[in-house]
Amino acid sequence: MGLLTAYLLASDISYTNVVPKATPLEVGRIIHIIGKESFREMMVLRLIDNEGDEEDTALAYAKLYQYLCDKLTEPVKRAIGFDVYSLDYCLCKRFQLAYVL
Image (cartoon, rainbow, N blue to C red; front, side):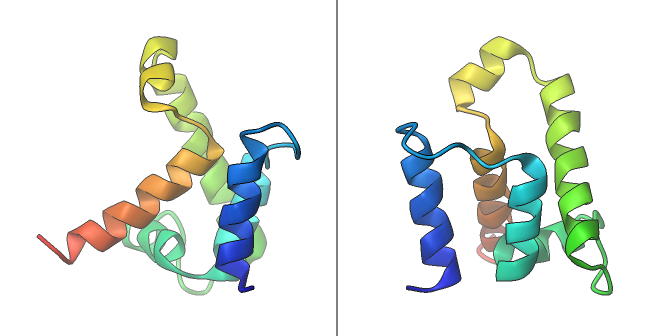
């Protein structure tokens, strides 16, 4: 099993409360380690640069997550299912969508 598959499986299982959800810092570290679409989208958005390390990515992701937590209302967060994993998913899909349009 690859890193991305393991991460996606663990994030899915966390919704059952069998394992705890990752923190924004942990998800940011995972994004850096996996280095796929979410990581590249963070570079496109200039949240990180290609010379940043794992901790830079983790801090940038945590700051983005906190910013959105502060800006989105609770009803909106509930309606869209906003959490540490859905933000990662949005970054990934935004990167993929940019090349389709």
